[in-house]
Length: 251
Image 1 (cartoon, rainbow, N blue to C red):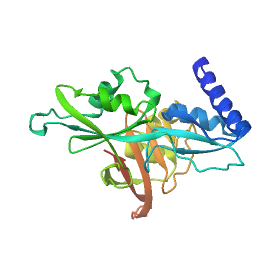
Image 2 (cartoon, one colour):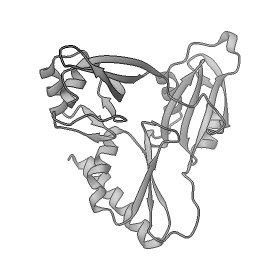
Image 3 (cartoon, one colour):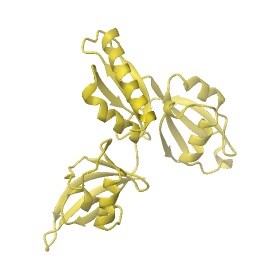
């Protein structure tokens, strides 16, 4: 681990100890995939329980709640979802993920306070820590050249706050990780193996260095530079005995 990663691990352990000692739930910032992998390596050393959420199913950036065994109150994650939409749709630019993230970061907000950003019909849904919610709501006025308005939205009542997928299928020799990765990323088996051993693949938030891992329905693969995929099912077999697989790619 780098010095920065060791400090992050110590932070996780400190939050866990404090939660257990004080009998209250404490929270991390939003964690990216690499930070989640460091957290997974720390699990066995925690003194408290924990839960993770990013606000909706399949969220990539997640916040950890460190929960003591004896908990006497109900709690909620300290984050909200903000709806960012053009104030004058007819005159707006086409807004992308980088545009939204860049505009928010330009306000001086730390990356750890920002969760996932979902886009639908040129409207963005931004998950952010409650500590920065008022500031973003008041200060975010423009994205690129587009004037925007920012309001809080209820995740449960908004069907737009779900990721969009492309449904795909392929043929593989086995459901080993290297074979499946070669299929979804259009790589040779050896190139796929090099990516795995090079630490470029995470499964369900954990870095996976073993080519022989057997993919199971529901596994979420995050592949650096290629995107995020869900292994859905083995749907059949070809005449030559190869597997037909169904999977989804995040758009």
